[in-house]
Length: 452
Image 1 (cartoon, helix red, strand yellow):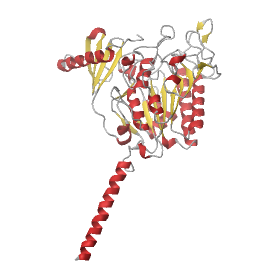
Image 2: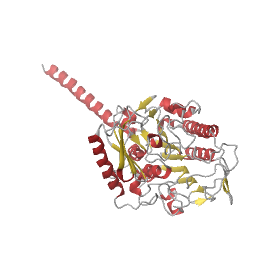
Image 3: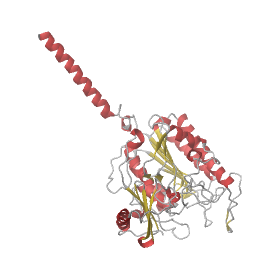
Image 4: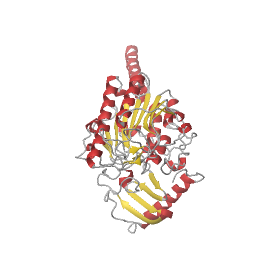
């Protein structure tokens, strides 16, 4: 009997130890796929943002004219969003939300920081950028390409958490000679003007490759902010469009030039992926691709209504691809409602940074990316001047200036936004009007808007 007791107790002890070990493994992340902190080091982040690329401008989003095999590979081996939105419908507002994780109106960047009228304005140094967040956990950080959140050297990216900056600070520059729309030199090394020869898209790619080569032994953040396919429309062999002392020359723009500009960018993205693989860090790196807003004239909204600058879907619904071999399930497609500001809390979680999230409007996407956990329902907002759009699940509500002419659409049944159903659902329209007014009051209360 004594032997039976000890045999039973031994079995019980083994079972308890086994269950404790299993529980420990789950907590440590061996079985919980989303716990990236169980790795020997935090993962790298490569964020690639196109400029004025529309929802329908990639072959993996249905474009049959433009071929983007490297982005197609990322979508095929990663996760592609169908309902991802830029926070703004033009450049600077989206970039302000990207940098801060907050609606851009809270930062005073509600419009474009223009070269002519807003050279004195930019993103305030009191704002905590995602680069500054990752610096708290010892990431090496770089921004290569477009800034568009301040022209003055004291507002340069190196003052906002980036160890390395090579690029241009204005809204767009000539692809060949890197002069902005006012005729000013605009190619920077850190916070100093340092001219450099080369086709703009290729330069951005090359400096990105150099940063990976030099920093692959440490956790790093590489933000590649492409100019393509923003005007001036220039292929590799085209002459300059901005002539010093003369001004901008007429763009002989065409769908063929736009196609080449996008395909050159895609070619460079393939080079970045190859370099990550050569450095042995591809599986340690989350690569994200998206756009800052909808397309300009020659781009494609993919059948959506409106383009750049519009509060309609075509102005802010953009491609978004998340690629992380061994972590994100291949060929995944997400219909979750997401936005640019979600990247800030996602990066903070990815790096294990302990920072205050109380004033952040974005949400952490990691549980959804890695485990398919559904996001909680939420309102999402766009404000262009005083036109406001509110999104709640499949419904989109729009009001014009001073909250006039309300319109309500069911995007599940009417993705083209052609059938106003506010008269059929007056209570829903009224409630969303109240939500729009409260949001506008909240994000602008006491904030001096620096741009319009």
